[in-house]
Image (cartoon, rainbow, N blue to C red; front, top):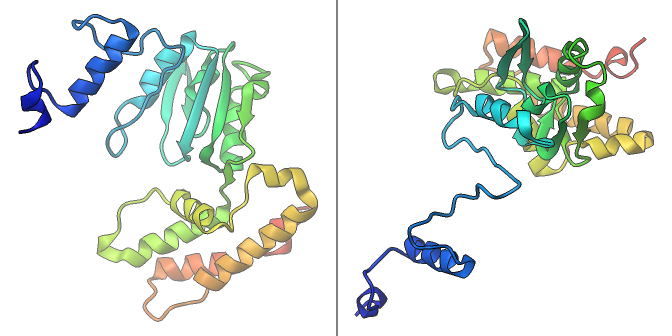
Length: 240
């Protein structure tokens, strides 16, 4: 005999049983639901492959919060806002940037392409000249380099008809670098005396792994591999 059949009350699923127990502990009536509406936090998650409207929802919610945080992803998607007739396109910055009283956090799970981040901050100068003061970046967030974007293009072309349609923004290769522990994080910028050496090592590894021409390379792959081989130049590391 199952435990549900032994129970004097109506049989229910384990999830329903847990919810009822949780409500009884909190002193909530059986007719109520656990909604979290009295919580000081709100989490917005996408349950499919993107384009669920997360940015629009976060934008609405962020108008009345003190902190808006992004915890993962990169600049491969975005949310466009129109404020007083001006267009703002966010790919990395949290949508809370429009709220001048809201602080914004880029968490450790985000991969950050610094040029993209700086362009978005520059676009906000007219709205809020001190916008940069409201941005906080985790020291554990990984830095996405242009070399990651080149590798992304090489891998996508390699798939041929089986390509997944990546945006070629370098998101996958940067997360791969994070997983195999040869990537660089924002915290590494605090130790700049070793940062350049580690960056050169990362680029050299990338060139060795992806830079050499292959027999079956497409024209696009040939161009991208050449770009990767030439990436480690004086201009890349010591711009005038």
